[in-house]
Length: 265
Image (cartoon, rainbow, N blue to C red; front, side, top):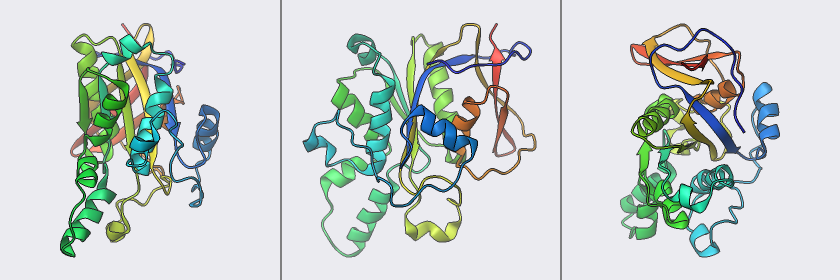
């Protein structure tokens, strides 16, 4: 389903994209209605919720090797492509964006290495930043471009820019997955994860295409004052996408990223 847009002045030069459909998962939040209700009044989700979605689309032998973060990302990927025919899906570029990726796997392996234990080849192959995208392309038989990006708090913007470049190069549509999980407890002292992000993995999936009359424009601009939010930066993007009257500024160094709903030229 397409997201609505307001009628502000025409967009400046840039590629305006539309969201053809979206899907998201977090513990206790699966349907679009669940997410809309929660994003209107965000609050910590119960820590005893399901750690991962069921992911029935993936065979059990492969599914059992996938951690909760990967299962969340794969689940929303399957949900967002349900109405895409197999031929179109096989050639549709994929972008996976995550700030931390499978960091918990990497930490566990480093601890095993410090104890002098043998490392699992499967754990290593699933820990690299493009592992989840590779899993999806293998399960779906996809031969199109698969990208994995990371850009700290603005990883969602980085994924959007990657999708924008692919669409500018001629792709008819791009599937963008934005996903993360809380930092391992080893990093609790850093304060980098002090948000209302769910206590387990979460994932957001957007199917993007070049806009017709209305859409979304992401631009790099001088940073404007933006009130601090309790949501993780990734989930703030989803919250903003569902509010056609809002604008979103995300700081990134000396400048920042400006998200707005526009009328495309």
